[in-house]
Length: 349
Image (cartoon, rainbow, N blue to C red; front, side):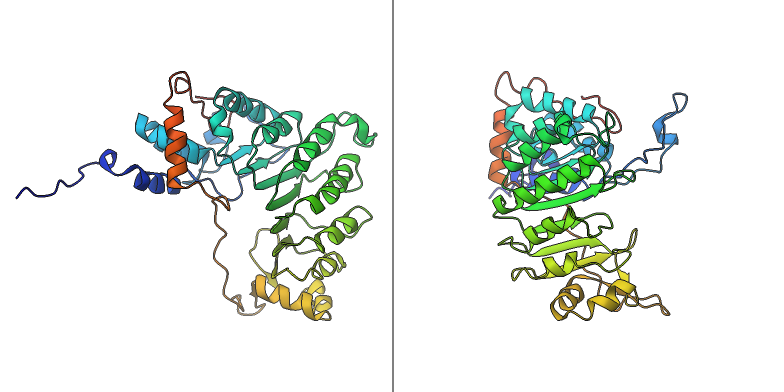
């Protein structure tokens, strides 16, 4: 009786198993490192000498498995494109070229991280019909920071694209100079407020900056308090007490509020904000469920730190879907040039 043949290399593994393995290798981090706006890259030194060592989840590291073999490229490419990082308009334009040349890849995109507001980024959103997670970084409209919002075609195009998405997860950031009194951030928040009632499946919102109570932010908090499926709110701890999170906590479906200090996954019990939050039972309870607290004296956590959020989209591609996309990429005329972004540049492979 002949013995069963044992696989001797990864290439002989079932493609479903290879897809699971490659997913751990090419899935990007939850938040991409952002180059400070004041940093300029020297023309005399390579970028590798000017930046910190990259982690195993850097773009270059995530690309490496796709260059192992044609099989790895075919299986890993749709997984790689589940999350797109578009730090600049140039990156967005390059990715748009790829999605135009390979329309099947647009169907696998689930998450997009926008490092700036641009017309090119809006067009990428329009090209990807199954996006569930959008991370927006509000910046300044340099042509006329305090001008009329009607002049800002980039912001208008982005908001128009967001209106057509069935969003589940939203993250809002801002650059250091994008104050909420400036035209573009105000316009973006106003349009997002109007879009929230149409996002019936919105489950989580993340304010990735210290938000204050203003005539622009209060309507958004009220809209989130009525979102029918909102379960999680995450935000940087405000400097002083305001009632934005108290308003959102009125949403009966909300299950947790996760507060954190900048650069730290947790807060102190003794902050001025928490002293006021304890006066409101439901808000205080939601914060206790979702937030890690640090002891001032012992420097230990009072509650177990929750496990890091999954870096994969909320609806990852099934093994069957990966195989379908991989098969389409093998179709003559489609598999000639699968373009992949190169780390730290707008070039593609």
